[in-house]
Image (cartoon, rainbow over all chains, first blue to last red):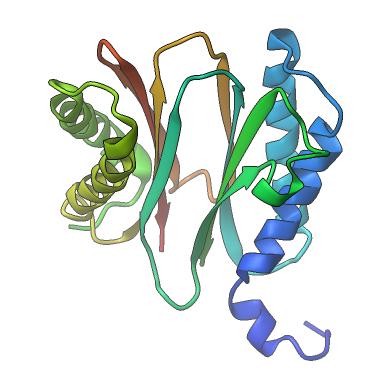
Length: 122
Length: 109
């Protein structure tokens, strides 16, 4: 590959990098929408595909798994967790919640979204 | 033991994780204070279980517990991998007070 300065970036993803990709994709799809049972299945697919595409465009030697969950805001409780068995230095798994706490005012009032991104080096 | 492809492991993974999750949920009632510990320990137990099944796979387990109520919820997963060797399983279980959804991804290395 003819690009310059690739060595450290190529080895892994940072939390911030993944956060940006996840937030960008969710905002693009959900920004001013209201929870709509007929549309949600299309939104989750679109969010997943946007994130996978932006990960693929980094051209790093990784396999990716992205999970997106959208839940209507009601009184029900929801907990998610992730556990992995992978290679410590190079692989990453992160979960992101949207809307973030501090952005509560502008962000969507009718639903929660949780995105899990798992990157495995090959 | 080594496996060439996740599809060989898939049934074994599905059966054993179904059993694990159902026994975990069996006598529990949704409890806001406890749930965080439950999801974390369930994910970890599943990963340990998977680790004993195969030595040439990396695994990612994502566990969601949702209280039964009025809320609608949708989950989607998209993956970029080698479709000959890698794969995933989705497990859905429930009891009287909650749903539990587990997504397992296996990636060979």
